[in-house]
Length: 110
Image (cartoon, rainbow, N blue to C red; front, side, top):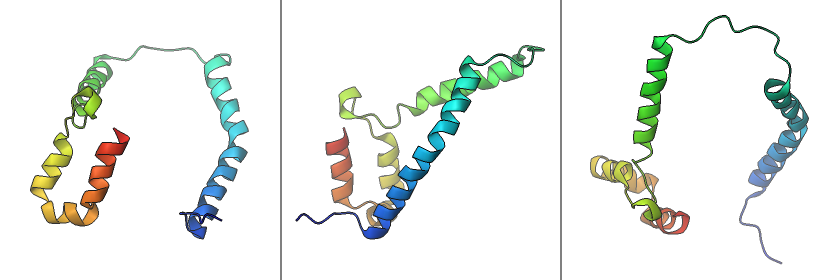
């Protein structure tokens, strides 16, 4: 018989989370249906002003730039953030992320 790699407390936590998700599904499905397919209960009084539009544009620009910080090998193999952390915090980086884990994440996930 093959022994599970997951300890008992993790199996209980995962099982509890799955049961809770299954119990909450009808509530969330009803909310999604009401939001996207239900009737409108109020009128739109005004459109968003330039302050909101500018802040959303800045947020969009930074989110696009943020996507280029860590790219998988299929999209250019850039690891700017992890290389920055390795150069600035080498001892902390080695204690938190062993080299085998870093190699596994870059080779297996990408």
